Length: 414
Ligand SMILES: *Cc1c(COP(=O)(O)O)cnc(C)c1O
Image 1 (cartoon, rainbow, N blue to C red):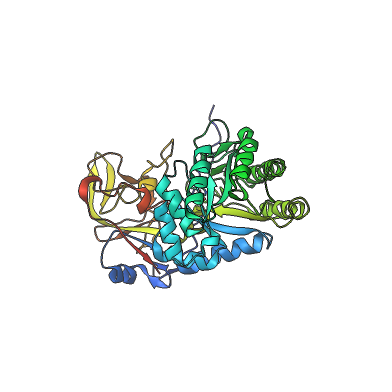
Image 2 (cartoon, rainbow, N blue to C red):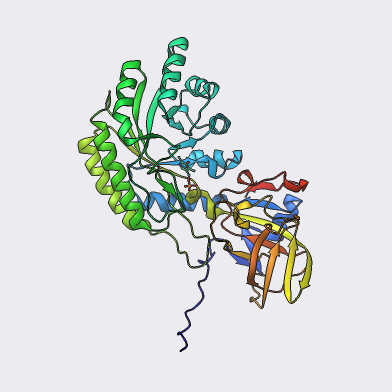
C-alpha cells in the first residue's frame, strides 16, 4: 500500500530582505555593490533597518512595562552593540570582555547585568568597579563579592540566578531544571538570600533563564508563568524588596525546514497578566526579558563566493571560500543533533528558479565543512554569491576561526 505523500517541509520565507534586479538588497545596497564596498568575501552583513523593525515589532506586542535586554553573546560586534544599546533597556553580558564592549557602547552601568558560571575574582572586581548588576551563580561568588565590597567600599549589586525546578519545554538548548552548572538550585536560594542579607550585599532581584531557541509560544508562556511564580515564592525570603525579576528569554527564530516564526501575541497577552500581578505583589519591581538571537539573528546574512563547481559521481558540489570556520552553526556543528540546512540562496540570482540539487561546501579539509547539503538552488557558477540567511547571531564569535588557517570573515553593519 502506498502512503499519501506529504509535501516536504520548506524553510520559512526569507522575505525580510528586498530583491531588485535579481539581487538581494541589504541595508538598501545591492549585494554586488555591498560586496565591492566590503572588498572581500566571505563577510557577514547586518541590516540596521531590520534591527530597528524587529525591536519595534516586539515593543508593539509586549506590554510597555516589560524591559527588553539584549544578550550580547549572540552578536558582540561593537558597532551592532552600540546600535542595539540605543534601542533596548539594557545589555546582558557573560564575561568581563563583553562587559567592556557594553560599556564602550555607551550603555549606562546601571542597565548592564553580568551572568555566567565561574566568574573569576578579577572579573567580579571589575564588575563591582563598573557598578553593573551581578547575577550570582554560587555561594562562592557571594562571599568573594562581600570581600571585594568590604575592601573597596564600593557596593556590590547582586541578583540571584536561580536554577529552576522545571525546564523550558521544546527548547533547542535547556539551561535550567535538573542538575545544572548555571545558577543556584531553587531549593538552596532561601539560604543564599539569608547570607546575602548578613553580608550586606545590595540585593536587587532574581534571574531565571530556562532555555533558548524556542518557537512554541505555549511553551514560552508556561515557562514564564512558572518563572514568575517561583520568583514570587522566593521573594518571601529576600532580605530587601525585589527591584527586578529577569524572566529569561528563549524566543527562537526559524532556521530549518518546517519551522515557522514565533507567535508573539499570546506571549504579550500573558505577560500583561504577569505584569499586573507583579504590580500588586512585587510593587516597584521591573520585569525583564533577555533576548539574543531573536533580536539580531534574522537581520544578518553570511556571504561567500563560489570558487569551484564540480560533479562527483552525479552529485554537484559548489565549493565556496567560506564555511564552518566562520559559520559553525550553519555547518550543523553548533549543538544540532541532526544536521539540517539553514536557508541559503544565490544572492545575485534571486529571480531565477531553483533548477538543480547541489551541496554547498567550504574549503576546509573535513567532511564537516558543509553549508548546505543537497539543497535546491538556481544554477550557480564560480563568482556567484552564496548567501546564508538567519546569520545575525552566533556567527564568527561562535566559530573556530583559526581552524585550517584561512582568513577571517569581515563583519559590516549596513
Ligand atoms: C545565551 C543566553 C541568552 C541568549 O540566548 P538566545 O537564544 O540568543 O536568545 C540569554 N541569557 C542567558 C543567560 C544566556 O546564557
